[in-house]
Image (cartoon, rainbow, N blue to C red; front, side, top):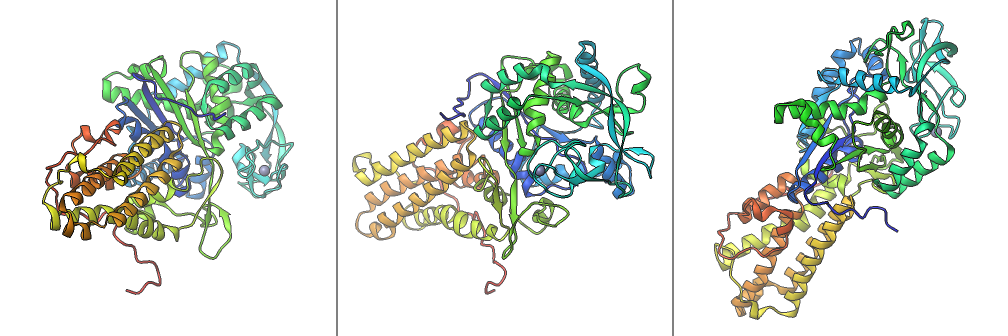
Length: 567
Ligand SMILES: [Zn+2]
């Protein structure tokens, strides 16, 4: 049984969110491959399908990570988050990922009241237990240490230098009983444990609701199995408050709540809603119009995230929404795995800021890298079913041998040849002259359209782009077999048939590649003179009418000289 057999329900609006990145650093290719590119590909696809879509993202400005970043940069969390927010937004837009809103949880005016209202509603319903618990404490600094101020060795898999909340390697939650050799990030000293009061959400109360949601949700098989495994182990209580002076104050009269803030993972997903409100205020003139997207059976909500956010989106957030009751549960949570990194001649490593094993989006763009080439290189190795490896040296081969040689060259040679040897416009062809090979080629195009549509509906973007590249190869083989440059000398009419077939193929590629290569397909559409309607997904495999004037073809994927190439 395949898990993702999703047909787009006609007439439904779709709200797409991508994980809110912490505003404490720049974005690298791993972030893009995990949540942002897949969400953008899906949004662009749905829009071509005529679906009413809103895309929501933004920076996650709260939490311990921000306080740590401010400490490190001798700055304030507010300043640090504003700085990285702007850089993240620029990087995303630089590679064609334009969310309808890229909000900021610390500056969105709806966010604090909404998060506090959300917390208070759960509190009033008796969802929280106030408990004294042992918390990491730094005696040298006389300060409680939230999870990320503590680093140690994962007691499950032995990975060193893990944060005190979750192991980056095995994904398991860590607590003082599991984390070994725990040290304070503030002083570097071993930590002690001290009593403090917090409000705990007992997730086990929502076990049945989460399990029920999981059964119906659009979710990848690996995610389903993973979450089922967690549910089988039984859910536990989790503290939803923190001892921290940056964040959203706990909205309770209780003196014990003084100086405490909401756990960042409590307020971050609420950011999807508060950012939707900011967007609704802008687009509809009324922030409450966001309810039409969050509390309506006319809308499906999809969250796109990386694997490290799985527990928060598939368990805690679902429990929070079920408890609050005013919003629909998400239709799907699409989880990608991590992207590992491999420098030429080196071992495969985890992508890591501290080890310098990453490609930064801003650096890639500043170095003249084409957005579409990076989008393609990440889509074709998308870590959808398992982790995959990004090797920066592959970018050259992906551009030159795949995009350039297969797709770019096809457009170039067909349009060039037609203009110089046949006619200045797309030639008319006589269907009576279609050969078996032509009919076979048309059937392949049709089949590719159907298969790619199924892949896109099922969130199998890697399969879709792989099939489109393969179709490009089929086209090139067809050109070689037909050899129009020879055929034109003996049978000009038959040559026009072959060219008409190929122009249909070019049109198909110009439409079907659009979710992946937005800049390039813009040029393709221009070269073929495609109208807005002709660029709709449903029209991708309909023939391109004859008689349209052809303009001088553009070079779609300029060759990249690899280091060491002859100049
Ligand atoms: Zn581990």
